[in-house]
Length: 115
Image 1: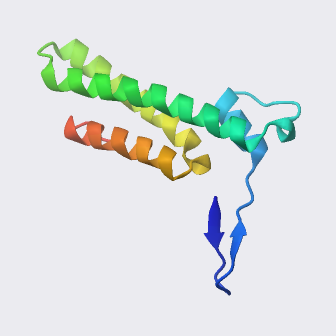
Image 2 (image 1 turned 90 degrees about the vertical axis):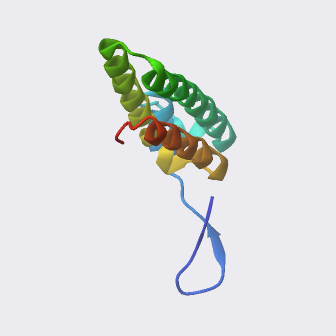
């Protein structure tokens, strides 16, 4: 992850809070989060995002096709739950991972599920 400094054209590496990232991935505090490599955290983040994405895509499709009100509401709630889990990971995402989130948002909008 890189960000441009306001006062120059130089690019500097963005400081990543590994403790917060590890907590978002593992859903609890680690004793030594600094021992987690960025590569491992990124791979785990991608895996989690893909799981949430699949559930959102499937649920959005069901929202659009079901006639059962309870099923529809249950799937809307499920989409919102998984979207919130994605939002916990978003601060640590690279461009590819942000695209997964964007695609899930598009699916929810297509199913008229409010974000």
